Image (cartoon, rainbow over all chains, first blue to last red):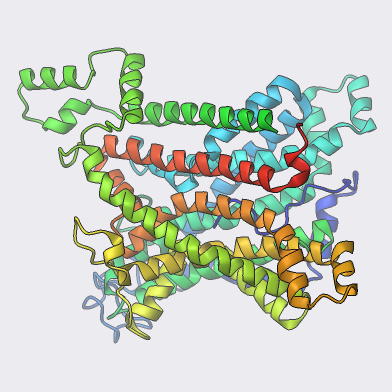
Length: 294
Length: 317
């Protein structure tokens, strides 16, 4: 879970103009086995997270037996005597929802900043990138912890912080990609006919950088899942008695010898989710560059 | 070149200054008054007033920031709100422990990644390369606490039971006196960063192996071992060194979760504790330290790249 993208960065190439770039990239990506495997894993995990509660035998907060027993239910009970399987089925929604929200906000903000910096150039570009540097100096989890210290574990604030910590990273990539489009004639033409600045950014530039945008979104989703689950795992995100994969690991980790499932189920679920998104992202990144090289 | 280096250094300092503003501003948003937080609810007004004066709370925000920043620069990190001890004495041992953990991890991870990268590049598109790239994709996807817990399950509890699941380093002892307790946290960090470094090394090595001078060296009849390690690797290693510095910087934040998993007595676990207690002076000091390490290593990465790349080294002359 690091900032330097493992997947090849998608910026340096002559952009294919105005052809639903992202659709073409996605189509190529789906030709790779790893993308398909990743997509399959991701879809299965999302279905478990979204539909799991419908199949849970118990309520996630109901006490169904003695603590840490392995005979009750499919996977036994947790450290307080609640059904592990039910908590597992309920615990995906929050991880996925928080991660998706942080990714959406962060990518949107990053795209806006990156495109604006690339288009404006000059002093505005320099100032935006220096501000980005300041936020890049905080490891993402540390920035989140700083905010939790100041305001307590408020979910919307944690989402906002993770989103803000994503945005300079996204902005850098989008700026790099957009710089190659800014010089094109059709942008000059749009300026000449007096299109509004916002229209130039989002109707002229954006459609030509959707391929790197797709890669960046996948990458940020992978990291968001890890960050959100990680913050709850530290006990500083979702609070008990909420059923959440990250929090489940926190609650049960000291009893991992007697009741491994209460830890292993959520750990494996988070692992599969992130591996799935990363495989898809890697496929998309390869497709957008077209070369097997990082 | 030196102009570029100076500019990079100046930008790094500016970033650090702005970081300190962000850290200070974030903790100013805390509701309530620091003096009351320290003394508790039934403190006498006189004692509150005395402590407020001592903490400069009765002065403007700007002069408070000034006092705080000069304290940071001179190593006077304030007093912990939770334990009433001075922050520097609370953290000094822990900084050493975390530094040792990161040092050990880097010492293993960097050479390992370079060898793996070279090996995968030499077997490009063969089975070993595919296995290597899949494994590194999977590892890179995993959050570090997932790696840590899986290691605990395999090596410390259910399967092998050969290493301690949590560090039992007594307060006052140093991590290097308890190497057994360092193995699993270090292994977690190694597994987390190796995919990134080895992948960059592989890519850069492939490029070099395709270059004319490597072909020339082979045609000259040099043994393959000499071609790889004497001629190709030294040229391919620059991007790997840069990414290694960035990974070291990442570890400054990565230790937070990893130390918590293993209850390792370093700055990461201290930060999580301090956030839980809302111990503002400790959080301020630790976030500043971590951000400073991050910035310094980033600047270092850029400088190393310039100094190691002949094309850039001579550019500004």
